[in-house]
Image (tube, rainbow, N blue to C red; front, top):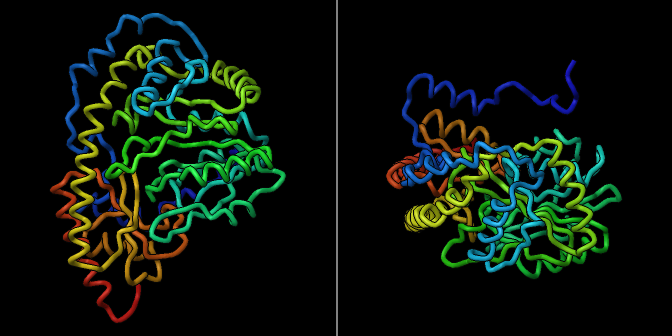
Amino acid sequence: MFSSRTNWPLTINRFTQTLNELRSAGVPLFDLTASNPTQCGFHYDSAAILSALQNPASLVYDPQPKGMLAARCEVARYYLEDHHTAIDPESLLLTTSTSEAYSYVFRLLCNPSEELLLPKPSYPLFEFLAALQDVHLVPYSLEYAQGWFIDFRSLERAITPRTRAILLVHPNNPTGSHVSPEELARLNVLCRKNNLALIVDEVFLDFAFRGAVRKTLAANSETLTFTLSGLSKISALPQMKIAWLAVTGPAPFVRSALDRLEIIADTYLSLSASAQAALPTLLGQRNSLRKQLLDRIGENLAYLESVLRANPLAELLHAEAGWYAVLRLRRAPASDEDFAIRLLRDHHVLLHPGHFYDFPSNGFLVLSLITPTTDFRHGLAHLLTALRSIQAGPTQI
């Protein structure tokens, strides 16, 4: 009765089952995964946000496939003011989410069973998005040596006649690594040689650590490039469901891509008038929220570094941006899932094991740096206690 594309394993995994049992029993947890900004204690200008949703323009139905021009101009202004990059509003499409933007691009570029190249480690959502669009994902590796970098040997080996694009996450979630200018130059050469596009996720671009700023890849003119971002991270407003897709590169490819995307977007016309009318106010919230987020990230990161210097049970891997920290245990467990379940069950510490993000081996932990500071410190103290207890044991779990 159902399509094969939705034939996912639907049984709850052991980690989630353990988490559900503890929450049902009312057990207090030390949550180091908190990443929903609306529930992390940040201050929002509630009056301005709610007032923006009462704009009379919301009562007018003006179906424009790429989104209202005024709203697209606001996005172009963001790129100019924050990233010193001029983006033509006509090269922008508004969507309800980056997930929807991905679906547009996947449909544009790929016939069923064709391939996109995906970095590993990275966020697990891509597997589901690709499956729903009948697209195959082929991994290429990010390697670590005092910093993350693209393994171009694995990338080049992954290219086949069925490959249509290379997917980049800039900066990566969860590694926090940017695509360097040198890497971008090599990627452009590869794309031109193999007739490939670039798909670039930049939702965390505005959250650079300690001045490690990199330019948006929406400025890339060498290769057909699709750059995705939105309010979810930029303005810490995931509930407002406004994202966008910027199309840049050689003019003939851009024109053809935009013509086709406009038909795709016109088929759905999904973004509400109220969201578009409110966009100037909602996007303007980024200035206050970005500072609050960066202050929180900086404070938690500095505390984490100081604690690990005094308790070298794990290595904090170098990152440049984002909302997350990656730890590599000095003594890797035999199973990431078993290790995370034991932390949860025996020590009530909730964090994400590395296998959630397809890290290449066991022993990686991912923590959210936007966790409220007091919760972060309490959770980290319990994590260190748990690590001492577990890693001091006679055998690995």
